[in-house]
Image 1 (cartoon, rainbow, N blue to C red):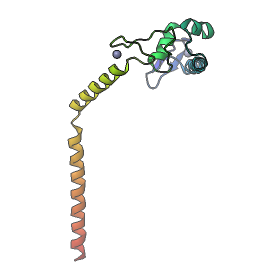
Image 2 (spheres, protein in one colour):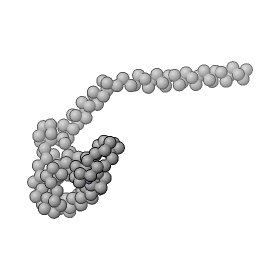
Image 3 (cartoon, rainbow, N blue to C red):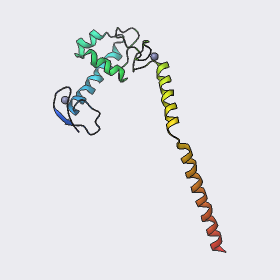
Image 4 (cartoon, rainbow, N blue to C red):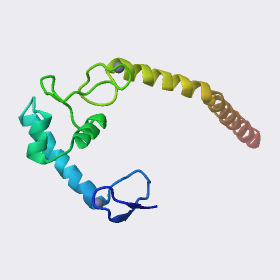
Length: 144
Ligand SMILES: [Zn+2]
Ligand SMILES: [Zn+2]
């Protein structure tokens, strides 16, 4: 599908339908992200204001990277990131450890109840082994 880049407004082909920016802008963003990461590594406790000053990134951009787990904040940073479920402080991602584990568990439970796959698997194995048996018997009889 053809999309319009949210950054430079150029049209680009998006095969997977998951990008909002053209390849050029995505590359620029990756490059920026790398530099921000290096900076955060060298300067723990960097404030959001400082990041904006140094890199010209927006609050939305910083939050997006944090939610995507591309960057992490340190406990002494003034950037506040909270769990979308319970509101407790987190350093990266969308949810705190407890909530993400709870969500993962409930997703797995839903998956389990929707997919009665194990039964099928067992059937296939049984079929294959009985096929083997008949072949063996056939060979034996042939030799006699
Ligand atoms: Zn672009
Ligand atoms: Zn939580």
